[in-house]
Image 1 (cartoon, rainbow, N blue to C red):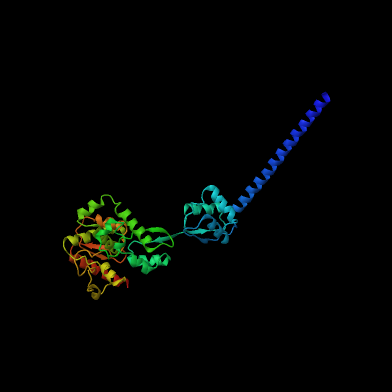
Image 2 (spheres, rainbow, N blue to C red):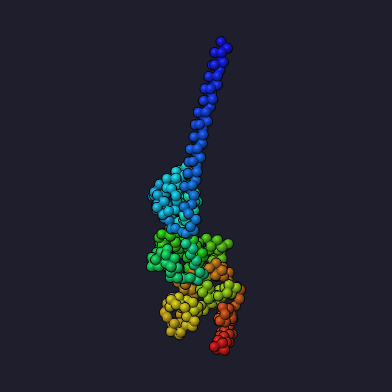
Length: 359
């Protein structure tokens, strides 16, 4: 009886050991599988190479994560399209990839690439619009950046196309251009957008800046000017003033002339008609008939002649308090200001003598 009990005990012990061995073997195999799978996945999520090249990659509208993964593999940007897709699926990113143009590199890991696509970190073109740029110059900048053709930009940059989104443009005639209302600034734009997309962004920036000025409507009322007139005056100030501190002074000259019903006589408005910059305007230039010719017509021209910057707009709204009616360039960006015509002639003659001496 004792022998039988001992045998049974030995058999149970053996079975338990075998059972534990099976468990251990299964666990070990699973561990190996999981480890191998983890390593395999991570290896395939690593960068394709260390090559620091840039690749333009487009995610088209309507493309799903599997199609995008296949295209990434075709461009040698990822190691394994299936792993990329499964990883995106597990993270819940497969439905969050955004369309657009991206700059990617084989030196980026699949995780980095996926995050860029999910965050919509598209390739953005830096576009700088200098203060005082006119509509044609702005259109040329966009064409040079290969964002949109100049002709298309100019064709779309008319008031009627944007009045439904910007109430302040309703003061403009439908066929008026948006001269002056495309704010000069540095922007970052995606490619492959229609002209209206870019134009709207520039108008939106103008709206933010102009109507962000404290009490701007009260300032307009105080000057008895509307938004169009303020921007028009600011554009002339922008073109005439080369030094920021002189902008409020030049603004005062124009305000004083408007009050006294004296023609503004701004060379910049004549250059706008001529569509070219001249060091000296001829008498023939000054006689060119146009409502923009402030030598022939009193008051402000019908609209802006360029896109004024913030300081020029502020100068138009807050002119310096002085009695100046004239100014003449000193040749170095600064000006000499005068109250009377006699003083102005004296300053002008002095400047002419200085110019001849320098020659």
